[in-house]
Length: 369
Image: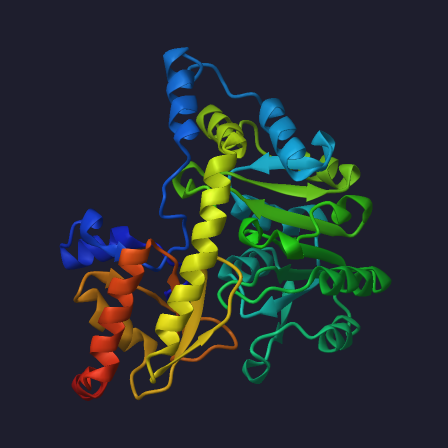
């Protein structure tokens, strides 16, 4: 199987006999500050009061209210689930698409979910020469060929490119004219709310926005995501959600995380500063071409003989784990992605990359492999 996900430090640990805690993981784009302090307190309260024993609230009522208030929509326009990936797999069941279009490079689970349901899947591959920027004209031409469902991520993963809100709204109109549903994956939009259409989508019949709480709030293990859409669309999705999809601990954690304004502000300041510093660091290495990004990761291309897989192996010998992107459509074996971590760790990454590329180790490794 191709390397389709980052963050599998468990498998890397087993294969290398390196303890998980000793691996510096740049492959998974998760906030390095850990979950907000209030999350632990909320979970402890649930356990202390014995509320983990009863079945969870099947409606996730408290969490829906918190999400709605935080994002400026109505509770009936929000539906929580077991991570945004759960909704990616519900989409083929809800809409029964025959022909779907994915704007790529993109998260692999879109295609897996759609093809697994028997849907034919086409691609609109954004061009490297354009910096992987979204092109509304090319998009319109492609959608007109006959698709009933379109998937678009903003910010994009793995390129990190942000699409302007006006262009996303234009994409929604294009899809509407063709009778297609537009699914906008905003899993990383907490880092770039300027491009989000989370409020606008509630007035549109053909748009669903996917959101995640795992990246920004560092709760990947708790599995918590949600959709925002027109109330009638949310009601349609709710009939497919299995009972107790959101457990009591995750629900309490999500509500507590949204209340921590200090954590949110700190994370936004950190992301802006470290993204700029890491971009400059990557740019300072002649064999690397980083791409601007709006999320908590950056994509880069290797311009030397080394491949991303070889670079990944070399860095792992220093217990640094990066994301090889060679399995993504529209990317080659030279592209890789690194998550933003804390300043000292990001500098360690740059130093390790400099050792590989500026001391000739890239040529040595290429020759060995």
